[in-house]
Image (cartoon, rainbow over the protein chains, first blue to last red):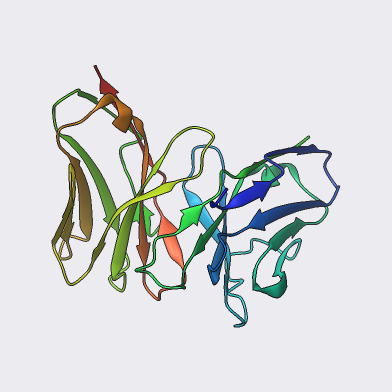
Length: 115
Length: 111
């Protein structure tokens, strides 16, 4: 498909394990965003990639969270030593360019459950 | 510290009537505002946006109003249809690379 693809769609893991979440943005989109939505909450900004610029990591909640974007395309969000409060839906979005006037196209998210 | 707030978690309206969803923000530096619609188990989809230089933007049945002095925006849906039933998020941007989202309003349009 032509949309943003995220995998896995669901992930259940034990507390303390590491997890990797993957995002395939729309081809040609230079901007990529990660958000987290906890139950009953809005979308919480995590990290933003724009082209070859240094990413804006200001939303990452702790040093257990990291993300990379290889070749300006696929992105991986890694959570180390998961905690129960990490349980949430993790959403990835891409846009043609970075900028407030560029609508973001979202994937369907990864629902992460930490036991 | 929530910079974008949607104080109504839910709204129920009759088909054919107007739906009005509200959003308040605290940061006067926000200069671009967007509304997204989200169905269960899907990612949000872009609906409509407005720049701070405008006070109104229309797209079909959807109109967004911006009141900068009150730091308030609203989304009007006229006429409302059952297919509009979803969660609506407002979002705001100040520096073109970070977006702040509200907690969402669940709209139920009754047939």
